[in-house]
Image (cartoon, rainbow, N blue to C red; front, side, top):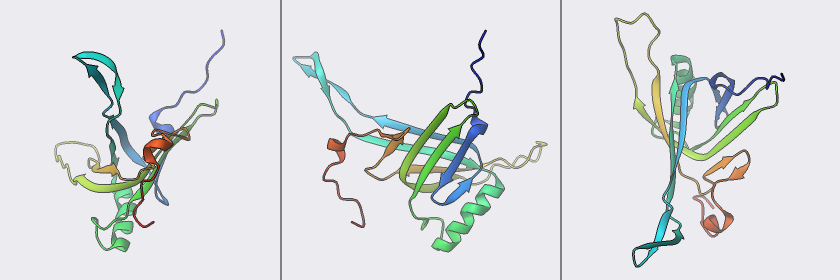
Amino acid sequence: MKHSGQRIGGRDFDITVGDLTLTVSKATLGITDNVEVAHDKGVPNGWVAGSVSSEGEIELTAAGMKILGEAASSAGSWRELPEFDMLFFAKTGSGEELKVEAFACKMKVDGLLDIDANENTKMHMTKLKFIVTSPDFVHINGTPYLSKAETEGIVRPGE
């Protein structure tokens, strides 16, 4: 019987926020794709493209918050943090690999503190939500989620 080798697990991910490498306790990234069925006389007949959005959340320990806090201090405030490209990357010794990129992510603090004096564990994580704000949107293993036709002609801020 041949063994399949190591599989990707949550501990295998390295997460980069801009130039910062962060150790996170948890990370999520979701895509909302509003593709809808087209109807003729109330009967399905093809589909129409809809809007898209992407958002996620990272949970940081105090050490991770310190690293991101230094970036916020350099920016002037937490709200002035610039948009960051985020990279979620995992690779196993057996060659399994996953690379997800989210572009121009705008951070916002969601859950700053969650303290429970009755627990014998370290402080709960700080939750930071983020929204993807670039037409480059999300790439999965190097392939963009959106087609070139969907983003053609969109002027990015600063261009």
